[in-house]
Length: 361
Image 1 (cartoon, rainbow, N blue to C red):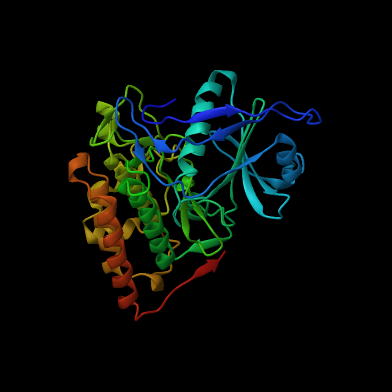
Image 2: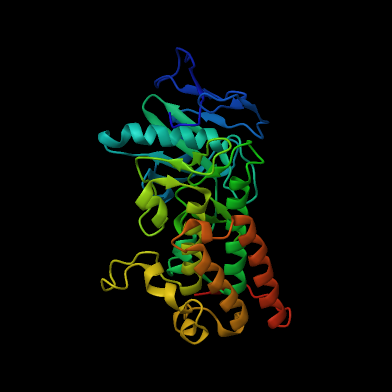
């Protein structure tokens, strides 16, 4: 079990009529506990349902291709319909044997953390299944998929500037909530924040997902030193990579990378480009505060009538500060929230208060 997280994991006896292996039941403890420190009481906001393998099979039509949504590092994701009629997204753990232990740890961390957190910009965990060796996570269904797909033309609609600003603000609020420690008494670092982990609902409101690598910071400490650097290439905080020191600012760096994706429409890492153009941060970092050069990297898919150059410049400046090499020079997520609110106001005012929506491809 990762440092800083203590959970109770109990067995449940199955009835003789059940065809599958015993599902174990996650029973949260009443507090978060840090090693060698005094427990801190917290309120648990909502519970998580426990499902069986049979229920997962029923919900997904035996994991039919028709219900297949996509695949990530953890496994395949399917659209499912629970017996209650609710439509959900079901993540099925499919890992090679040498990664199963790591996957089990991520699974337990995700269940534990999302069972305690509740925020409009965090994806909601509906429940989980731990039936024998089978592992599933059941989330609220996010109709519009992930941010990266829309930025790269896979989604059904292109997002104009006001929508991108709203997505950035929603994601910033979600990270600020994790960092604030108000929910559990201890700040949480997401550690794998990226555009594919920003999901979009029917109204394109952003919700952060995938908490398998999340880390609770030691109480009273701003840094956690780890021997293993975890996350996704392209979003790594350079200070974390070189020193192994994980801080809240590691998430801020990754957030800055996402801001650059929103601004340019490009991927954080694009191996199809030349050696000097593969990393988005290195490619644009030196021009973010040069208004003349900045125009060249604005996503050409953005409707010119949807943004003001002033708001673009403010957004680029915020992104440039988020991806600074020295973590102490980056803004906090609370500061990012306030700046994005000002940028949204500036853009709206510059456009005469006009609100733009989505453009169909």
